[in-house]
Figure 1 (cartoon, one colour):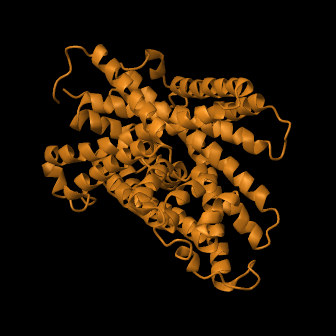
Figure 2 (figure 1 turned 180 degrees about the vertical axis):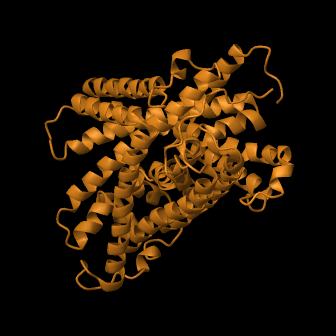
Length: 462
């Protein structure tokens, strides 16, 4: 039998605009600003199609989630749907995968933020700056959902404005040759250096495994739905606009990069964002981008604390996490769950700082650990697609007048699910992501074993 959501409702203090920015900010991270060259190296200019293809898969996932949220918005919603319409184990895995993913992501973002601060203050202590960053984000999340949403709104706004400027400046270089000796670069770089598909089918799918990691966080829409005013109206607006905007920002920015610069020379440029700003004469480009990637890192950690604390709060009410995490503060936020997640990020951060003192190759280990969050991060997408199949069957009466149904059901579900599986297979084939996907799989296996031990005799078909 499925469990009902035992967690009390949190206060609906977010606006629809803040909800959109949270989902947008969660999916536009440091990966775009500093890691875009790694996706391009696998497949060349065709990385544009790879971003569009993964965007199509996510459009299906988000429409499936939006369809369910419209009828039943709630905190931790996609895990609720997994529990009710797939199996309690699916909900349990979705929740713990989210907690694991965002502790790891939060830890990595804090590490990144301390590195960005060294650009201005080279001698600053990484330990102290990390502690101050975590304390700042902890206080913002403890204040209220509204305070968190306001902070995340501005973090996301800075990223969005930077990407728009990047795209506008890029088109000025492409069409007018500003910063290029007055010679428009045109579009020849899209095919002039080995063709459009330089890595073949294998390279194309390899790039998708990295792109999937870049897009993770878009499902934050489902978690914030429990704390947004007028949820139905906000959900329809957010689902329709968020993915479209993400595609514009990702595809637009990547298009400018691979059009202005030969794709095979990007690795020697550093950040393409810095180079593009510098190219048109903005001499403080490095400082601007450093500020932006700092806010991107803070945004990633901020979203992580918010998202996973709500999941930990719900797990506690379901009896799957220690009971102190059930507590709600006077400000109507799950304060102990927020402190628990922040504490996990801090412990991971301190261990990383200690390891880096003894072993410089610890950074390689850290990359593996960070990448291991990608597979658990995909679990919400899998369970959303599965849950929506059964959701339709259980809500036939409501679906007749539902204004926001997933198009081409059920074929779109099967297509998106199959493509996500194909991407996981290519993650295993790719030697650069193989260890990470194995670590991610082991985390899910351990969580499953713990569940089976705790629920011995209860495990049966939902």
